[in-house]
Image 1 (tube, helix red, strand yellow):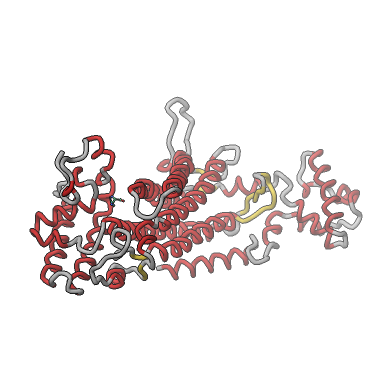
Image 2 (tube, rainbow, N blue to C red; image 1 turned 120 degrees about the horizontal axis):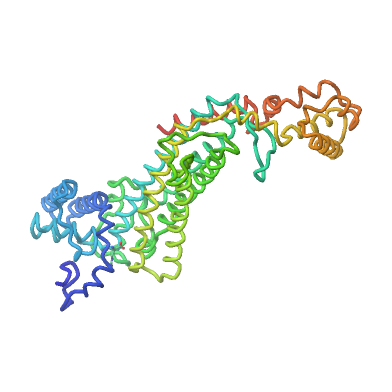
Length: 462
Ligand code: ARG
């Protein structure tokens, strides 16, 4: 194999074939072509403004890069594995197209700061798309919640029936999580939008560059304060992968509930055919495979985060080729996160919630026990005693195979003489939900307030 034209000057022969294959990244980092071209055009214009190249040369480079972009987008670009990566493929083709001027593009720049800016532009763009997909999911959950404010189901702790909640409240818990994810990404993107251009290989450069104007031109707010940090920092990818992991954790929890709810023992949700698959042996099966796979794919996104944390942990300053490993994990996480967010929204939109079964399930598991305890507190018992008396009531009802509301007044009075007919209104499951109007509670006013807050939040993101 011939030597690489970008760095081959001091080499008598090219890398062994296996080495070239091992170091080759253009198979996947070509995904960054648009951002590489954007960054190179900003760099070329700056070189022109600073008098490092002539304005005509800058113009030639910008136009040539547009032509390269067009070839890539038309599918006529001839990717060369020998040129290693997206950056050198683009530069080599640029030089073919515009001649020797193409060789001036790399003035005052190294691939180290180039890849840093290119990848930051890419990550910033991708995170913006995750935000759109996550906000769409929030909107879906808000819409669903709006229609289920009067439906109740058992709220659980320890996956045991605890207290009734509205289905709206349950769904909105997830809406808040994904809204938080969107905001977390805002915060991550602040640190993504810092340009390392001008750091050059590691120490800065002797050319009179104006890196701030490049940063501004590509829409970034700041430049690095230290060139050695600038070319070796991959915190922005780590943070993006953490945000991705957090999104997947939230999705996976929701998947877990959907899977449980789809089991006939719960029977709380029925997924549409379009979001289910069958079994090759058991004809009755309708499996929630999308939710299962999403729960499963969470692992690979965590893996990308763990992988990169491990990659950077032992690296001396500054750029090391290890850092090339930042891309495949991110690209994989990117595909997974974006597809998962939008599939979740689709799956929920088409799902039918069996609110009759949810309501019926409230009658199993003494979800109104806290109501009885609170009622007794209202009659003058200290809470701990009320808790104890209610425990006896539960034991009695359990023995008789009934709910607390099915015990007769006489039976209840054997436990505490202060119990009256008005207890039955308190034991009502809907009433239990209605009375929980503390801020953030499941009460209808609280839920209406949440809906309003989330709607305003969504409107603010348009
Ligand atoms: N493909 C490389 C990467 O992704 C680009 C930077 C290479 N720099 C170097 N000095 N070999 O990290």
